[in-house]
Image (cartoon, rainbow, N blue to C red; front, side, top):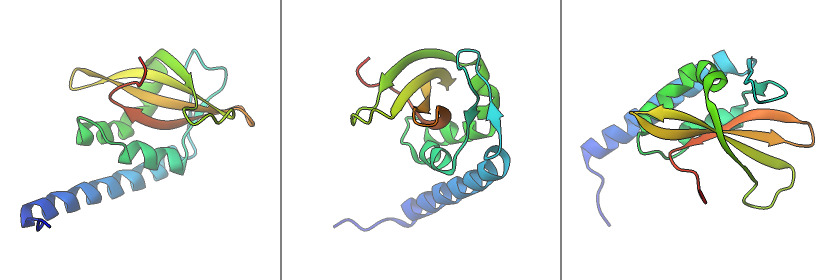
Length: 133
């Protein structure tokens, strides 16, 4: 079993601290906010789970992706809807939309989830690739 180096532990702690700070910021600034996108019939809400998923999602440019949380309410209304999909696990209550954005001049996709039982749109996550595309 490999020993973790001091440098690796320091990097891991910095990532963790940065995520905690961003999560705190997002909860204070986004939880009661609703943003509107011209292609969605209702506003897009922010939830604790969506914020957590967004910040923990693996990504080619992890730190830059996480920094987007501070401007996500400005990015979403301007982003182009480039795809949609049913839930990959077969949950008929969920439907997903992919909104294109760029991180370091590379495409990334903000995921908006529609929960059908209450017709609510929420920020769900962000990815650097759409599967099955």
